[in-house]
Figure (cartoon, helix red, strand yellow):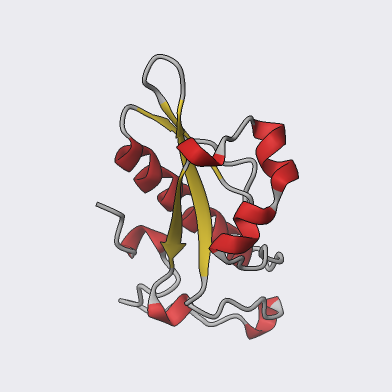
Length: 125
């Protein structure tokens, strides 16, 4: 299954923050780990939608092992693996193999179609 990863860490004061190796510009802070993960997953799905709509390339999918083996990423962000919660963000079945077609080959959205609209995707609970 194609997935992107998100790491959720606790910071001093009880705040939670997300990090994504694939989307480093997306950082979400929240009051609980689950809320932070859910909002980060939604932000990443919206970014994938934005990139696809613009015909721009997407980061390649990485396995959990690929993310954990990237020590430079962890050091740069002060991530201690022993305290990080790593979760994968699944994509709906029709987006499990995300390709980057040329803009003219992009699927058209028809009335009632939800497949290209990330606001219709289920949010993590």
